[in-house]
Image (tube, helix red, strand yellow):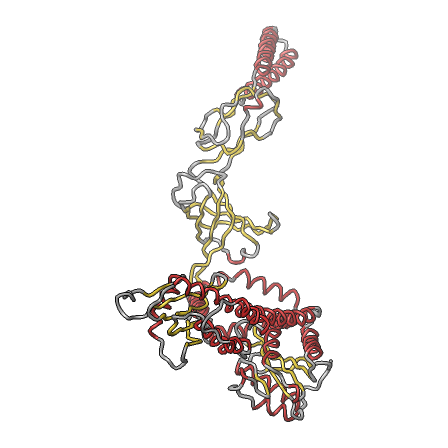
Length: 621
């Protein structure tokens, strides 16, 4: 509100008027509240407009509604007929003159509406009714706009005062909060808040209580590191805190304007026990519910006023979430679990949270279905395909590779040449032994013709030796062509890069598997091998044939484990059942062996159950 000096300055700069009254300026400067100021201001405005017959001042009440705050010349006069002009001025946000019927043609008055706009926001409107004749309406509008500056000054000062109060309140609350944040533990932080408020607000005692969901428990008292929780005064303090928490609002004794209608029985009892002290309780919230209460005590002659209570509410709003966080952090694992269960049960069975309730019902229905519904229990294992008979083709003797027309992956017929070895040396050796055989044959014939038995016996032995050597060489020549023993697919072997290279006797050149008969090799984890038995059925899905399932039956379970990929696996052989024309040896995939039917939840939690059993067996005595 403008001071008397500012009003005098405005008075000195005011335009002269025949209806000027110094008493109006005195009333303006002496106004004790906003309504008196508005009435004095409107009187001065209408006093400086010669044709003014009536005037109405409407201001925003803060909720978007405009209500009357001043009427001229008589507060009891009904000026509701000026509302239409006020509405037009507010809608257009500019000066509006009601000219539905021209005054020159009738004896009706003219209505002038002028909106009050401060910092781009409509805060009110003034409507002045002018008598006949209204000679200079623009001058009237200028006068109204000039006078609006006084209201702008009033609003600016009021906003500045409010901002100063809010800034001081926020600064005070942040100071208390910063002190509390310096302590990592929950109780130390609560004690810091109590001590800081007691010293800053000159309180005899400050108590901080926290809610456990049903009751409020005293956590800290100012300047008292330890207190007896079973004393009557502590019980009285907790009762007063619970009284404020139940009402979810501040409670003060003696009562102030904002707490007059609140129940104060526990607070009055506490005040009597303290010898007639003044008591106030403010609640701490986490945004949705009350989490604690701060109770302050003073002597009766320095009771808490409304501004102090507002400051305390700001402090409680800031320190409450921080203390709740420290409380949860300092809890042990069991305490946190209990808090989580309580909050979950409250959300499930308490009011509100429909989405959480629907989700919980849906989860419970799914778990119930899984507990009673049964499904097929199957063991999964990595699998690959092999031929039922897999023949290895090896080098028959040391030699050199001559040709290699076949490589891995090709289908060959029975007797088809897979590769040939160089036979030039063998042919020369065969010719040498043939010549040797012929020479020994002539010697033997000559010895027999001369009836020389001793020579004939020696030549006969040499003849048999050369014949054996010749047969051996001819046998090697016959084996220089390596052929397929049956129709099948070449599983491994590609000698084309080795043509002309020497090979050793017994070296594997090719592996061939038949196309009509296959077996499945499964690598079963040791945790699942106990569920398997010979004769069980299963299904194989291969990586290259993911859209087709190949049935098989378990034939042999090898009782020897091999380490692979950090786990122990058992080799399980199975026979492919039915025709599978697209199968090829070496294909890999996933095989699933059917065991029996069990509950779905038991199947899905089997690994977890096994792990728990092993862990308990490991650690329990």
